Length: 457
Image (tube, rainbow, N blue to C red; front, side, top):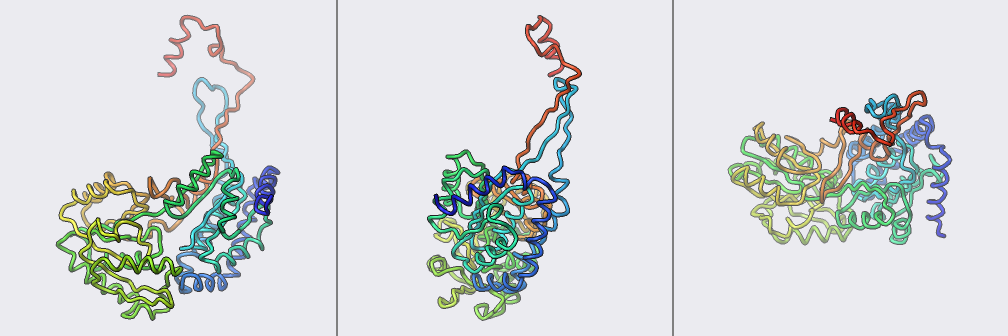
């Protein structure tokens, strides 16, 4: 038996002791983690800079701050979330008591990606802990510096029989995929997500899949163009475009294309300067393979802005493309980088038809001042989430869930939604011994069905 198998068995045993169930135990675990993250913010920031070139401010607002916020939220609300919920019994259950008992699944596996390596490992881990589970977290080898600090934090705060962090090598993933986990939480590509789900099926393990997709950014002729451009640039080029919910492409009304392109250029220069490759607050591509893939995508369309790159530092400037069609190579896969194709439409019917024909994206962005169009898009276009007249920020905060649908994933998390994702809702009937309904027992009389029909109708 390998070390990682021993860890799995140790976590299974630890969970069965019931030590993770008391609310006080969970709260103390979260408080330890909060203190440790707060003490090591500089090291976390340095790790994110080395892995992705993130600035101190970007590291905090996109990763560290979100984790601290989630911990604080659960510390405040965990008692309420975990409390049994009373349910009115049906007549046939009278005079019993009905309630929903919220129970942790058990041993969970969290598979985190490289693009937000601190946030997307720690945030689901925090949720798993809050819900009363144990967790094994595997982090991407592409973000090795962040892996080291995440592992260090967890070693300081938790015994390995409770929380364990390991780098996601091929051998570790193969071993873990054979273990009968109680829940698996995966963030990554649809291709790998299918493999995760297939392996989980062998043990009937429930999965949460947070995947990607080509998130459209629709801009109609009624939109506030300068404001839309500013917000599109923010959502697209933060983390150098390596964001699963980044606007993948702009789909704008033909009449405003030139105006929008000019506004996008202006917004890029205002946010990143005229020489973004020299801007220390602008990140870099995670590794050479991904850099070369993006370079190849740049060869097939007309660049109207940007296009500069630095192979030594793995940097690509924010780049805009015109004369793009849905059949072009750049539109055949999620871009996951600082490349923004611009396509056009004539009517909203054309937009809706196209959105319905494509796989459901993780996010859909709509810039418009037409309330009728907002309702039409919401009702007719499928997506994991929607952000109207903004980008990215619909996932901020703890009060709404975040998740995909169809090709972009299944299940959701953040706040209470995440707590429910890592919990089993156990329905309980506690029946009274002082009264017994005689109608339920055979032999049945000719009038029994009539009586039941009356109460069931």
